[in-house]
Each structure stands twice: as C-alpha cells, then as structure tokens.
Image (cartoon, rainbow, N blue to C red; front, side, top):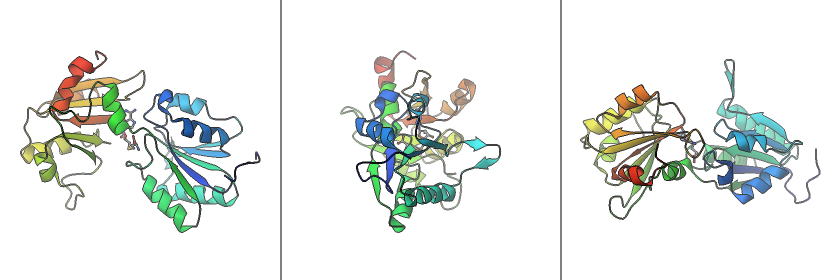
Length: 254
Ligand code: SAH
C-alpha cells in the first residue's frame, strides 16, 4: 500500500463520477481517484473512467452481477468500513452525483455511525446532464419554471408508494424519471390515469453523454409503445414536459 501524505488514510471519499463522458468527471474527483488505495465502483461509472484508474489501486466492481451473486448494500457498507479501518484511503465511486438516488446518503450515514470520516465529492448528475446533452434544458423560462426528479423504480400500484402520482400528474414544469425503464408502463399509466395530458412530450435518453447515446421521443400516450419498438434499455433518463420539444432544435440530430 502506498503511503498517503495528506492524512487520507482511514477516510472514505464518496465520489460522483458524472454521467459517463470521462470529461465530465470533476477535477477534484480525478485527483482523489489518482490517490486512492482502493476503489469500489458502480456499474454506471463510465468505461473510460474505469480504464484510467491507477494501477496501484485495488479495484472492486460492486455493481457486477457475477453469476447469481450480487453485492448487497450491506456487503458494500461492510467493505467500506473494513478497508477504512485498515487505514486505507477508500474511494466509493458512484455514477452521476453520489447523493441523487443510488443510496449515497445511506452509505454516508452508515460510515458516520461507525465514526469513519466521510467526504463527499459531488458529481454532475445524469438527471440534468443527460437531458442537456440531448438538447433538453430541464427548465426554460417559456415552458418550465420547475423540475421534479423521481425514481421510476417503484411500482405505483403497490399499496404504499412513496410517490404521489396524482400530485405528479398535476404538477407543471418538467418531470425527470430515473431508473424508469422497467416500470415505464406502470408509471406512464399512473400519470395518464391521474389526468396528465396524453399529448405531453416525452423523451427517453439511453446512455446519455456517451458515444452510444440514443434518444427516443414521443408523447405520453404513445411512449410505452415507442420504447418497446425502439428496444429502450437501462440506463435511461425519461423527461416528461414541454421542454422535450427543444430536442428538435437543440439536439445532436438523433
Ligand atoms: N446518482 C446517479 C443516479 C443513480 S440512479 C446520478 O446522479 O446520475 C441510476 C439511474 O441514473 C439510471 O437508471 C438512469 O435513469 C440514470 N442514468 C445514469 N447515468 C445515465 C446515462 N449515462 N444515461 C442515461 N441515464 C443514466
């Protein structure tokens, strides 16, 4: 193990890797990654960023589904604690920003409860950057004065949803849904059922900010069908609202 000079040993850095494009990694994240003894990273961290990890660092892909085994959240937290207690400089690298979904808050709390020092290095979130790179500003003076970020991972038909879809359907502005591919039909139907205009523009942006970016656009009443025929796969950000219309003029022509 390299000797750290800055008193970083025993500390965990909760770092945002940005939405995929390696140039959207912050300078601070880049510096901290270079100094790490061990890096525990998620599936969503861009390939180019993974390739740039220092040779000396121990690497653990905690997002990998090796066979049936998958790291559970508890395993990850336990590993962070163990390696920090061994005096290592630990980097926990997450896609986008560590505190927007992705359970960063829980990890920081668990570490704090064990008396382990945690420093958060914010990242560029996919929730804003992915639409931006597809020519969609999430707010716009003419058509969206507010923006709401939600997880699409929940089943809206379950009895106790943490999301109030009737409220979301009534809200003006832009709705940005993360982790929304699997549940797209349930979520779109919930919005329609609660009275959201079926002609509201929708965009699905897959692997945004990377060379493989793909955009599928439609309106609320046909987006489920369009997503099926286009074979939309995660990771994707779904943007619902009038700002989607700007994709036509501001997008890269996808
Ligand atoms: N903390 C992350 C989000 C974690 S939740 C952030 O701030 O970006 C994971 C979800 O993020 C995915 O299901 C997808 O909805 C979205 N996502 C992350 N990177 C993406 C990308 N490059 N393109 C499209 N969606 C992305």
